[in-house]
Structures are given as C-alpha cells and as structure tokens.
Image (cartoon, rainbow, N blue to C red):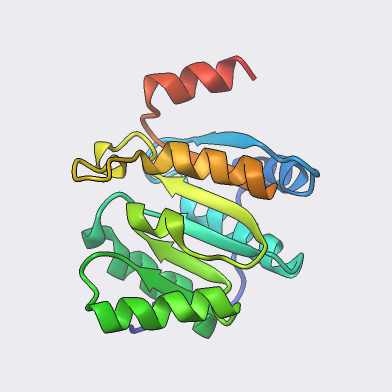
Length: 185
C-alpha cells in the first residue's frame, strides 16, 4: 500500500468543523447511538471521518471504516495509511485466506486500531470499538445475497449498541430508512 500524499495538517472548513464537533460530542457519550452524515459528493465527508477517527483513537478506542465496493478500497486505504500508518488493517474478500487471517490477527490483538473494509469487515474482532463508519450507507452491496444472508448496516448498528460505539452512516444520497430515522432523532 502506497500512502497518499497529504498536507501536514488536515484543515476542516466551517461546515465540516461543525459536523465534526457534533459527532465528537456524540462519540464521547456513554451510549453514542447512530448518526447520519449527509453531504453532497465532494463536501468533505472523508475529512470529517479522518478527524473523527483521530479523536476516537486518541480516546484509546478502535475504529472501522466500511466501504461498499472493493474497488473503492485502494485509494481510501492509501489516504488512511498516510494518516494512520501501521495502525490500519484491511479486510475484504479479494485478500487471500492467509492475508485475511494476518489482518484479522492484527485487529484481534489490538495492533491494528483502524479497520478498513467491505461488508464482511463488520465482523472484525476489534478491541474496544468506539466508532463504526459506513460510507455510502445506502448501497445495496452492504447486504449479502449469499448464505448466511446479512445486512452489514444493521449488524453495525446492533454492534454499536452492544459495544457503546458511535455508528456513523455517511452518504450524499441516504437510504429512505436512514433519512427517516435521522429525522425522527
């Protein structure tokens, strides 16, 4: 993995900073629940994710960032490795069984503090999770069509509830149910 080139300091604009502050406060609650980060494409949701992951790691917790497609993983992974280095583990079905097992062991031991992956990453054995992010949460690829069938978004929400982690659903076009739930509080 080749780290992306990044600026020395990640600067958030006013809207991004406001979103980060609200999510940071929610992350620090005893039962942080679920939040929706709704922003148009190019609005900087990834920058908010990075700042939130930084904060989560500074609290001594671990984080996960899920993406709907394996094809989205390399570019994002390069960026995250640039910011978080060897703390990043990657989990997706294109890895060989040996590679997947090595990554899984790093997550389970706590050596990897940030998991990046597709829907199956939701089962990663994270140590003290504080944040689970589903980018492009509306994508159908978060639902497994093979047996056992599961919806990674629903598992992430359940896991966040059970482990007192903030579940952040991010999207430029949220699903109807996520938008409804957000409007209901």
